[in-house]
Length: 383
Image 1 (cartoon, rainbow, N blue to C red):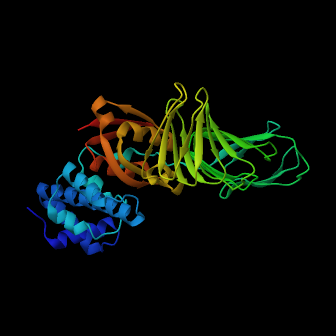
Image 2 (tube, rainbow, N blue to C red):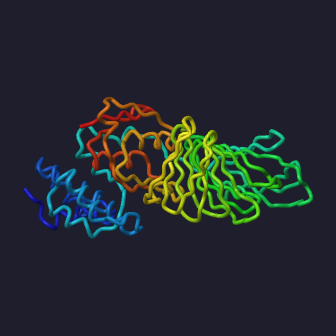
Image 3 (spheres, one colour):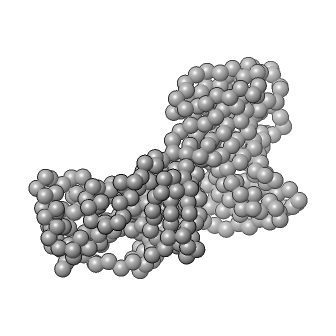
């Protein structure tokens, strides 16, 4: 039986945490009355999150072909038209309510989850080997050459280009562990955001002919313009050369380094390959430093840099790829019960600081996958 408009509105109000005590009591009575009512509730909830997820994309103008995305999503899982119409007008949200645990028999994710999202933090290794844990620190450090380093767990690390008479090239290293992220400003004014399980080695002052840094993992760069001194990011055997621009490098795997250019122009070169690939804004360059191959294509850049803004944004991405990201951010392990689950494609726009029970619930209701939590292990299987 199709629920009436009053029930739909009560469910929506409850999901948005706006329901009155009378509405909540009315919902409890309605759910207890009939198993079909529970099924209807599931459909309303599913439509609420799915459709408002699409609406969020439109608001941030991530994808141009919204109609195509809408059509593909609605085709994957059909639900009553009234539920789509009722929820299309609502604002995007990811709140999971206690009512959900009452109606999903055998799927009590929220009761077993104690896994928290990542947070800001890093380990700063100075040139003299001293290690500083940047968690709740707020201090001023002095480097071997006299350079000042401002350390702040919220604002990041800022280098002040002092003592210009010193021409010694010395390096610091910032290590960001699993379940962490961090940002810093280099001595030339370049800003860097580091994703989980990443490492950046960089000069305290740029006194060489170029401004070269060394990256393992993933980072987003906003490079300060200096036409006299090129900025170079080395990852494995790949060099990305820029003079002033915004770009993201994903270099967790030397067999597949992903460079996305947001603004400006860069050149990418791999050892054993004389060719330098020029990139324009919107380019994604895929490089394999083992066989020295490179290929570029035009993409929507936001899904590749959304992590910097505190979002997970997936565009027809496989669960295998997605779960690798979640492993780094939530410090968990993932086990696939079947290979079909690895291939399931997911489309979604989720907050990185969302607790994992909410995130997995949304993914479960927006794909053909199911999740089970066993300690710090997420078990994934296809339905």
